[in-house]
Amino acid sequence: MIDLMHTAVLIMLLLSAFFVLWLKELIASAIALAAFSLTLAVEFYILQAPDVAIAEAAIGAALSTTIFIIAIRACSTVRKIQGDGRK
Amino acid sequence: MKKTLFVAAAIIIGGLLIGALDMVHPFGNPGAAPMDNYYLENSLKELSTENIVTSIVFDYRGFDTLGEAAVLFTALCSITVLFREGRKK
Amino acid sequence: MNPLSLIVRVGCDIFAWFMLVFGTNVIIHGYMSPGGGFQGGAIAATFIVFLLVAYGSRRVHSWVNEGIYDVLFDELGLLSFIILAFLGLPTSFFFNYLATPLGVASPWFTPGAGTIFFMSIAVGIEVTGALSLVILNMHRGIRLFSESPMEEELGHDR
Image (spheres, rainbow over the protein chains, first blue to last red):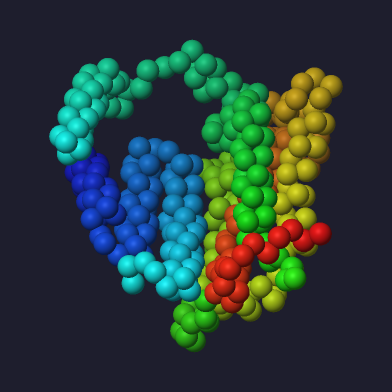
């Protein structure tokens, strides 16, 4: 039972890491990174490291996603002011 | 040319990584360092903490935690300097 | 960022306080259950993220004085951590001078873990302040970019 769950979590980890690189939109990529981080926290909990799981869930899923989204918004604001770039 | 170089580098690095899997400890059986057993046996006895990780982080290896707090403080200082509101001329 | 709708605001209002209480719980019980100063501080810093998402950066910045916030959380936590470490200096740096062996009651009103309890609280305060201030300052950076276009360097203050 625990082996099945372990395999499922590892496959989800690989899938979400693939989507982080595959998605073109930057904000969607940041959300996929949050899903990757949350899955990694579950993996740490299965491997009996609850300390690391708490730190990974708090920093990776909440704070790091916020910082990435702030950075993406700031970059788009600067791009809009200077008038060049892709969009 | 560039693509050929990239494929060659990817194959070499991937082969090295897969070859390194041979030396990894088997799953669920990490190799024991001689210091591990000391922590596991004496942490509850000496400090009466149930959480061995906290006793290592804050007592046996407290100096590392001091460095980590200093790194966080430095990051905060640099971000404050970067995004400070400058006074208009 | 502009404030969001009423539903998001009410939900963030409720869950922000739950995250703060949970982070404090993880910090205080760090010596006996999984967690500790860094993890609890990172959870408690989610409080300011919830408030920023719900109310927008302009209103949150009008509530928070960042100099007082910095001194009250960040420097106080780091200083108390270093002072607690230095107090064990008659034996060695980071000596646990309050710890009692298993089964012996502590003469003070502290848990048997001794300085681990206090150091966990100090590091928790420090990490809470640092991570909250990083996010607050980055939000102010967005507003700074959008209001005053970057034509030239503003120069030093004084």
